[in-house]
Image 1 (cartoon, rainbow, N blue to C red):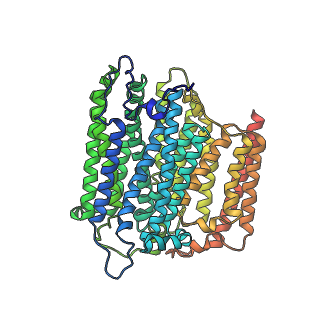
Image 2: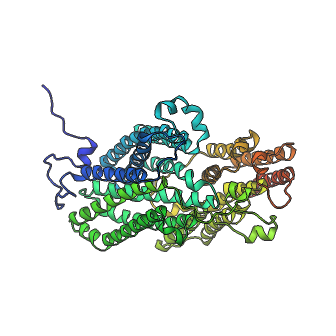
Length: 590
């Protein structure tokens, strides 16, 4: 006799528009944003975004006669596939945000992770399709011809390579959901996956491309969390924990809206003047800005009206306003894709120096100590992280009622200040001088994590489960970075690449935090020994690391690459000696 199994699919449990006659939860009236439910809303939003993206691209200037042309199919398919891929990424981020922070432990959290896994599968497939379409568009070839030359072309095209990275990250997220990895880890991986494409394209070349790339990357990450989180909130709106989830997401949404607005203004100011607002590109910027302002007004209405109604059990006000908000958000994603395919205004162009082209800004003066300590260039990633970490720590202290050691606060604030100084002050000369690069590497990878670890942030976080690596594993991660870069010579191929700088500093900071979270004498001494050995290797090398990049800078002041490398070697030796001395002294005091 066959048994009828209950419908336990994620769609049925989280109600993505299913029409099964389930009774509503007690005290929560059954309502939905339209006859099709959330699934219909999402479908309408995806179609709207696709139409906007393809329409804006099709309305652009036709290819010039005589130039290679991939054909109308590729011109239409590229923005269409891209917008669906980016929306899939948004859904992955939103589902994992819900699993990590909005949904309490239980079956709903597992089902949200399952939905993220299915969306990640589509994200991976669509990103792989974007690799082919990008090659075809860049080479001006139809798809069959592009497929024949795909492998060598991907390595030469940074955008295609970025989409390949995205496809692999999305596939790893899909695999992670199958392996039941923790949602916070999968969320972090998905946020990494939305960044590579933002670091290529228009923002990655020309003057100020470091700030332009960073602002666009933060912009895309904030949009993904904001839009994906709202969709997830609408899906769980009838759950008994919906009001608590909405309060948490309200704070997240406000931060994301502020980040989107600020980074959008920064990025637009680097591309446009007021005279350019009448161009096609300027009109699209104005339209996108108006959408962000309107979405901010919707957020204000949520905080003033719908959240209080939701706490009383009324879901309809939030659903109605949230539905309009999601449609506008998805349409804005389509607008952003169309904007990325629109050439910027010509305006007044000046001849850029080789240094400006390669690192984004000029370096007219030699690096005197006074300039190193006073001149600065904002690092939107790590400088912002330092400010946010400071504000978070002070806010957690404000909420405590029991005493907190002053030395911990001083240590944390010193670590945040050092991170800001290392990346925003010393960071100005870091792309052009190997010695400054080594100093920054030691500060961000060793000194900053040491100070932050002594601030005991986990004790302020409350009941939060955090995985900490074993000291030996953390030490291996710390030493792997300088060994790969300087001993094995990988730095030669990464010098001057902004995305590589971000990745190296992020990995160094994360590995250092893991090392000092649970200090042991032997691992610290191993790290100290490796830094000293790397320093000795740099002192004895006859060829300068990164010479192929540094020689192209054409600096306006004398710069001996080998002498600078020897200075970097002494800095590395000093870092190893200081770490060894710290280890011995602190263990004796303990």
